[in-house]
Length: 330
Ligand code: SF4
Ligand code: SF4
Image (cartoon, rainbow, N blue to C red; front, side, top):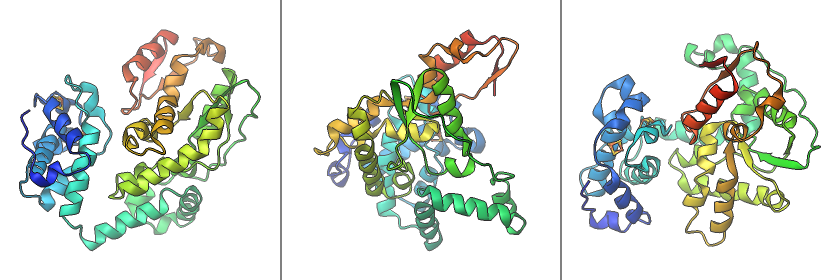
């Protein structure tokens, strides 16, 4: 696609990157086929191709409106479109660049600003979020239906995690929302890894991956969280932790971008690249391990939900099929 960035767009720190991403898009529209918002809304501007076109227009100096912002807001940043793009368009980075420009040009209504601030205040803090989930369960009947349906039915107590006993060790991103809504997910992942001879080293100092801030108009705060996590993990990485495992694929996708996003930070660029190289979705770790050791017998069924943000999605599916004739797609 031809581009002609405006004077002000050319002065953006990521202008060159945006221009090069725009130029890789051939406007074929294959990506629309795997975009949930396009499937749901059927509007070209609520699909990746339309959003790319909107961002191009913005960066070329055309009018930016609340409508433009809304179409970009509706993108889930799920990156499913990237899996079907034949040109390898780096959509999510273009979206982040475009969103920052649009948000600077179009002030949000007060209600939206408060909501975004509220989410940024609560969501990245697991203890606070968990307390609110517990409170919501107690007062469920008083909550609006939409909120009730998102709360777990009952409080789930977290089971104990296996002790660190193997020579092979990995770190795990504990996450911010997941420990409150599904406290056993990380524990279950640690048990599976333990049976494969891999221990999870606790790293309580690390926190939210930063995606919540980064995707809610606070990109600098999101990058500060990335730096904080790098500092928290670094001593264990130096001691030989072989991966940073995530059980929430969206968080994992963001950690895999630390290296790119902190590329121009001389204090963190190298460490961020190392951290991104070590980041693995649980599925990617399992893909490379002898799953026979788990002792799942053929009479038993295994359900596998492949995350849309997992870069090895298709490989993982293929491997799951190899390991179990009873593979069930969810
Ligand atoms: S599939 Fe890729 S090249 Fe085609 S329109 Fe979508 S982003 Fe552009
Ligand atoms: S990131 Fe997800 S919601 Fe956004 S355009 Fe791509 S597929 Fe659609």
